[in-house]
Length: 579
Image (cartoon, one colour):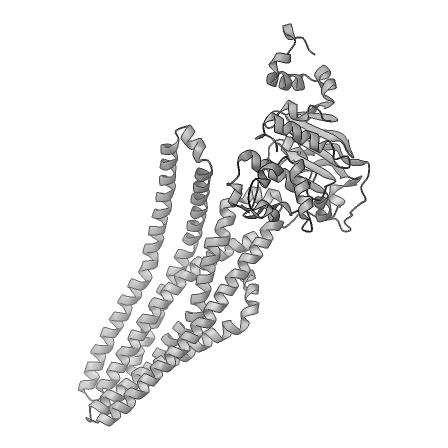
């Protein structure tokens, strides 16, 4: 939590002025009981109406001044807290954009969303209350004790005796609740993750009639979290009830002691009223302080979680002197590459070696889980190899400047990703200076121009979240067009035509074959998608079991033959003979 405080530096003035004005308000409040005692003893006791009116005007003036100080303090506290949380969210978002894929995979989307929303909001609320009450409440409590001793030393000893007990209660509640609030936030992460999975996989759940099972699982997690929150709430509630009981006992002791001393003439009635008012102020401030402790406990737990995320190492390790070489004929080379995901028991790729030259079209095919996406994810350095090297233009990708490397690559992910905004904004990611002619050329190559031109807004049409106002095939063609803008040196299509009909995919392959200066990687489970490639890499359980043209693989690679004939059974020779 301490490391987050650096985001308060731009708000140093507000963090000083907010407590200062709260202290001024508290000072006004501490003077009121003394004035009320004077009104009772001198004004009411002597039937002096003019004195009562004068002092009442003074009390009203103190109240007005306190109100002004309170509003001013609240303004500065809100300004500091909202700015602080906004800066934290901005820093966290920047940090998340730089995290390597393995960290994003490990943390998970639900956890990251919770950190940026609920946790940041809790930190903001905790800071706001801290600036307003952290100094004010103790100042009023100790100030009330000092004023009580000033009114009457003997009665003030009751205040002195009650204060340590009250402090013990408040600190004890804080120590008990802080770890529980951390567990509550972890439970919220899990609940959010389950909710997200259910919303995204709603069709699958209905298809397998798993609604009741998921409702039961959600109910169990939700009830467990609710039970923990109730237990924590009961402990937090002890603070208010116990402080209230202790203060009321102290008030009773003040009244009993004060009555005896008034009877013997050692105290006046006004002084007893002042003592009771001071004890009431202590009660109110301790209740506020107890709530502040609960809020601070939550804020510290949430702040620690945000801080742990900000401490994660960002980006891939950079070379001391990163390079950005000139394009060469040998665009990509895999040199005995082995790759395993962090924490995985077995490698996803084993001893992969092949070369792609400029203008080549490389098909990557294999069964589900054979390592196709893992293979092409190493080219833009989404992950680092475990052994071997991946070279782009003759240089190990680990020696490249990452931004320079990725600027040369056009990438379409397996799962289409379009962001809310205009179509022009989505297409211009690779080249913000791209003209409308450039965008239309990319759309034409991706076979997306016809349906875009049918829209009255054209390139200015709005894309909804996740591109849900487009069909699956339209989304895939738009992501391919986005990758083509700027004519990348390397184009990677990760199963990006799975939703296209065969005719559209054929036209797309024909358009891509005209990119003579671009090395194209086509990852697919369709043999028809890679059949015309210059070379086809066949993967089986992470290893290359075939490398060559379609004709060569049909003669020499049983795995490729099995894939091909399963999709084109009519071409299978009679009697099971190989082609």
